[in-house]
Image (cartoon, rainbow, N blue to C red; front, side):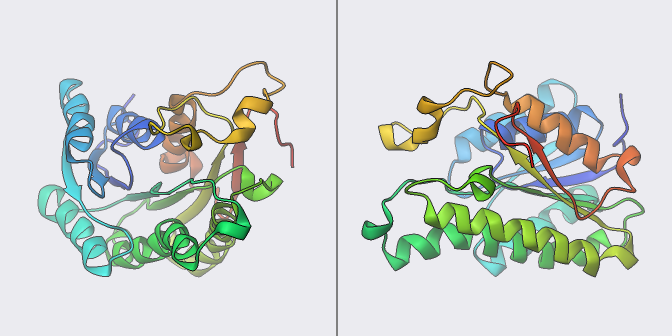
Length: 249
């Protein structure tokens, strides 16, 4: 399948896990991909190398999505390497757990900065290029806890919920440009997390989806691929859940 042949995508936070799976699947659909990470150069290169090994095209552009100059550089890298931009996937995030009473303002701002400010800055930087595309899309990666609530994640819940509102507002704002904007909300997904025990959300140990298993990054990637493709041009402003039945809005 090559429904994205000739298209170009930026996937923030695509060095591993869901971001890597999204980058790989968009490349399998024919898109050239800009792989992004803040610091994980080796892992980002591994993503790009995996795309290349399957015959796809990819470059690595390190950058902090909370910095305007870095988001501008990401878009510039896409245009320099591939000449256009058609799809932006805002996946970069922090998902730490901190009791609210112990949470500092710096921790609050760090998480909201990457998830929410990062999506804003990337969309702003990408907009001029996306407006030139005949089938542009923005896909924001949300979080189920934004809809269910979760202990020790006030900063993450707030930021991810804000991303839902941002999706709706941006979908209205860019409708005249035929840029679709949607939010994909993963449920409990099997991913490689940090070395500390706190890196794994506590609710993962306490619950199992009704479908009887946790999801895979590839299942989230397939949904993003669809929303970026030609069959989803009439879908915009939507928040779409993929969670095995844990949360049924």
